[in-house]
Amino acid sequence: MSPPTEAYPTVTSPLAIVGGGVMGALSALTAAQLGLKALWFGPAEADRTDGSDARNYALSPATVGLLKRLGVWPALEANSCAVTRMEVFSGASRVDLTASDSGAEFLSTMVTHRNLLDALEQALKFCAPVTRVPLRPTGLEIFPDHVRLSVEGKTFDAQLVIGADGARSWVRGQAGILWGQRDYNQQAIVAAFHTEFPHGGVAAQWFDRGDILALLPLADPQQVSMVWSSSRPDPLTPDLNVTIADQITDRTAMRFGRLRLEGGLTAAPLRMLLTDELTATRIALLGDAAHTVHPLAGYGLNLGIQDLLCLEALWKEHRSDPGSGAALNLYRRKRQRHIKTVQWSLDFLQRWVVQSHPTLQRFSQVGMRFVANTGLLRQLLIRQAMGPY
Ligand SMILES: Cc1cc2nc3c(=O)[nH]c(=O)nc-3n(C[C@H](O)[C@H](O)[C@H](O)COP(=O)(O)OP(=O)(O)OC[C@H]3O[C@@H](n4cnc5c(N)ncnc54)[C@H](O)[C@@H]3O)c2cc1C
Image 1: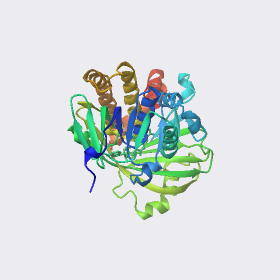
Image 2: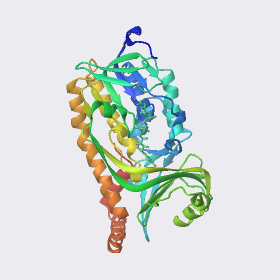
Image 3: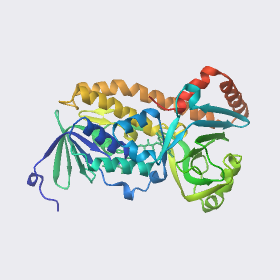
């Protein structure tokens, strides 16, 4: 039986962050850099089973900028890979997007989920303003000037609670924020391959028969990460495990030579999660707790980081009460419309890519050729490949 609540004094902080993943860790570190005390709730991810450990992120230049400011980039850089060119194939058409076309050094930078989270957790170990509570809170009560979280008989008060606890957010449920989702009827199959030829920092993407297949370069010059948004009903059947390297070698027309599977395969259903509100009294959602998108453009985490950059600016202005109505109204006003625009644009792109009518497919290939030869459109696509600013 847990001891009565009164046995422990309540811990009070300006911020309480719920979510032991990348967005939770980044939020805690950002708050600490501003000198704001924060409680960070969430168990270590060792027992996470949703395949996130196999995931690799294409970080936008703005995201890399934040990691540099937070001092974690030196621990990551050696294990990252700058993407300098992107090749997009659809049928017989091909569009190449290069960073140098728009005067940038790189389009995005690949890092693994594990390396990113390890670097953030390491930095947080030496961060005095952050207190880690390696547990999931079990109670949340909202008052006009604070929120009270409780777990194992202890209580914690904060002026603002950040819900960074992923797509199935507990904070969102406790706050009564309504949500909905669009199911893409696709699974993201993720795997790593050894390549016959060095990838040279090239990311390649194939729009093929309704599927979207991406091979993304990793720090090892002969290793790529695959994200295959597939409509296969049985994504992880044993026969796929046996033959996948050959299948992908064929589907990619030997772009990186023969491929050899390294490690296992994981599959995750793809959905766009929409929330009615980003905030409730003294509560703000960010990252996947607030929105998810199709991974075709590598935007998901980058979009969450944009939420955080917005909150960081507000915390500077509203230091004395980061959870005030004024601060949360601004967060909602600045982010809500932008998030919905990105979500529906990517949704439109996904629908355009998966349409299977032959006339529409021909239209899509003509569109690709048009894009390849039109300077302004190419620039727009390059900005898109570089992710949000
Ligand atoms: C196949 C695939 C490829 C992707 N590739 C990219 C890419 O290239 N670039 C990109 O920007 N994005 C990409 N994304 C999106 C990206 O993975 C997500 O947007 C990002 O991981 C979201 O991070 P998060 O911390 O908000 O949520 P999550 O990663 O879901 O983390 C939530 C954390 O909260 C913890 N938690 C849950 N409930 C509680 C609770 N009650 N209390 C405390 N903790 C709790 C969980 O254990 C977890 O640690 C991809 C997604 C997929 C599916």
